[in-house]
Image (cartoon, rainbow, N blue to C red; front, side, top):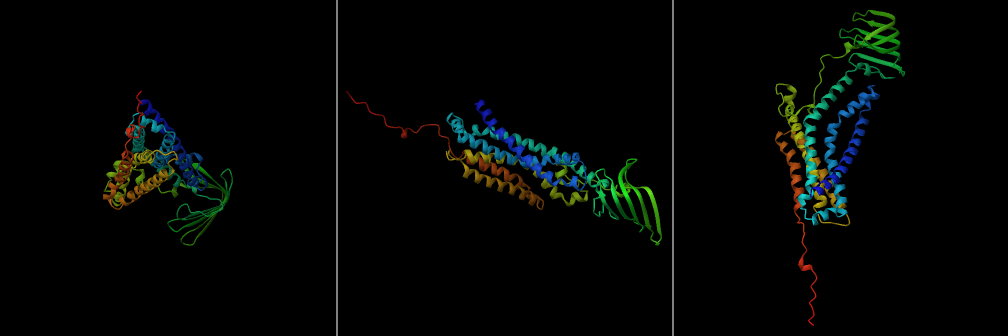
Length: 378
């Protein structure tokens, strides 16, 4: 029997890996298209774009795994049942539990891996992602100038460049800065280029002039061959990274620091996210049970199982949507967090009941045997 168990497990594992890779690639493609703003508008390197895209993967994989489990199990079992290999297992004396146990063990293993990713890998990746996005957002050198557009990277500063060439040189540069004391300064330069001075970012202006109006109405006019406009003073040194619920570890979600104002206001949302981290892996087992029920729960059919598969696909979609609804409702009422566990567990129980509701007949009904021909006496 161990040989048959390994065979059934291999038949499930191959399609599951392919489905996971295909769905992950599709999700990454969708995520990468939305992240092109980093290269186009924020002028970040391809390495930064790739890093941010990969840091999204733990959450994407956790969302994809139940779907991959469901699709792969349907494909593998449909082929095994159509080719009557499952029927041979039943005829050889295997019980329904023995036939489905390799699939359920695989689903349980995937659920444990998903739980590990939810509790440790995702928070670690999302914290790194949040820090990387913070660097991109606070990178004035990358967001200061957009070719042919007036931009306001920080309040009180307006920048315009007619063109930016392939070397990063800006041409026909215009800058207007209003300081807190009311002083307004206008910079006009034929060209400009980003540079670094003692670890600080500066904008080097060449062949230009400055016009400064003081609050008393005094105009100061100055021409220059080169002027270093410091960018470090424009950033907010007190700005800190704020971790969202998706970036926090489980103990930070279930036991937030209620002395902090944000944690106190969002306590229910943090609890809902914490319970979702624990409950979401259960959908891998629930979807596996539904796929098994769709194929093995009914009788054998030579015409295929398209109708049953379509029905269970619709049920799986409804179940997952109910899971999202339960998580959203839990953010307003903490008592509804029990639904996040009840939905996948109830789905698993109903699906397994559908598998075991029919008995496997291994005996030939003697009433259907042809009558023996009586021997004619000599």
